[in-house]
Image 1 (cartoon, rainbow, N blue to C red):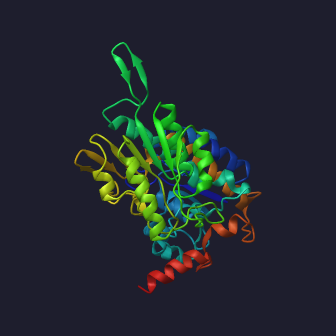
Image 2: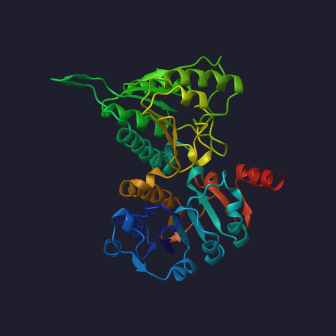
Image 3: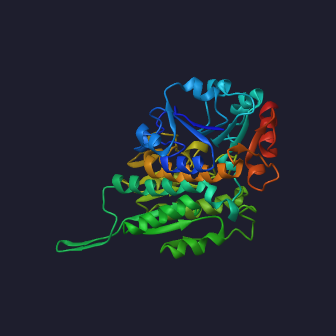
Length: 381
């Protein structure tokens, strides 16, 4: 049974789906692992590292695809890659099934089984497989470093012979994994940090990291689903939150936005008026750029200057920390594959409470109801 990892082709992607230490674990499950030559170089892993771990390294991409039983990827394969996979092959990775469902039509046509790591349920049993949280951790950390490098001041409070240097002020919007990591990192660097989230329950986590929690009265409106994700709110509720954010944005040196709703456009939190009220030299790092952005002025992977306020919306920050991002993701993928591989053979149990919900396509059909609904909605437009 062949597990294949290719060199990622998406522009700017430096991660690799499996690191050598994970190769050893898959071989222990009696799987054969095949790596495309150079796949791990950007993550500081050489072909020799993979060979030492027991993998076979090849430069023949077409042969690797043709012989793959399982293709482990970071990003969704290209259409031409899907076309070269054999019927019944399995693809595991970030597939964006709710945001770009039509891109998986080639997998349906080819009878390929796809598992999207975005759909892995957030249950205790699946914590080791939670790739969304792993990558959000990296993104939240790196966002703070971008902010610290950009603003024309230092982060910590300093008492010097020349006088006192006040600390920078950081406002983090969204207290999920990325937001909490951003709060923790900014606090380590010495900033005064405020955190905002529509979920009142997130307040305790924000406070536990030494930040101030900004809470808006939403009149008891439900703000999260059963999986712990934020849900879309009414315009009135959103306007209350935007007004609070705009007021605190005036004193912020760095704003980091992290709020996203799976399968939907990112909620608008920072209006143009709020940006215009910010001081010169400040920066907004919008981590929701891939789904429209939390800031009204954000443009994906573009740096914008608005009267001295910088707005950036990087869509793939984890790729800028490829070693640790790859290590975390590789462990997530390996933990998931351990559910599919038994004694060197593939055994798919669609009744499993992790395997079933994360499966998108199987036997030429869309088996995930949310993705099927997205495809239907797209087709009816």
